[in-house]
Image 1 (cartoon, rainbow, N blue to C red):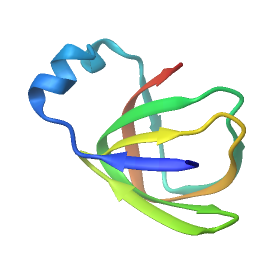
Image 2: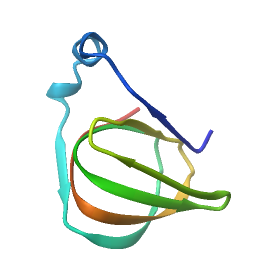
Image 3: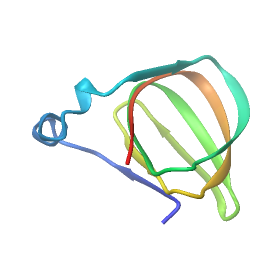
Length: 88
């Protein structure tokens, strides 16, 4: 698994205490990124397309996304992002 996208219920969000996680914001941009640790995030706003070796994956507001440790990718933020995030 490089990237997984899920829809969480409000009960799952509360059980994981996601709303207490830090918030990251970024304007429309394109950049390379490498994950030294697994990241979980819940998008509060925005739209992103991520390019990996096997293709592209798009996600946006309301998606819960997990990025695997060791993943290298290119982020293309097409609509400004605001997300809760946590490294595990």
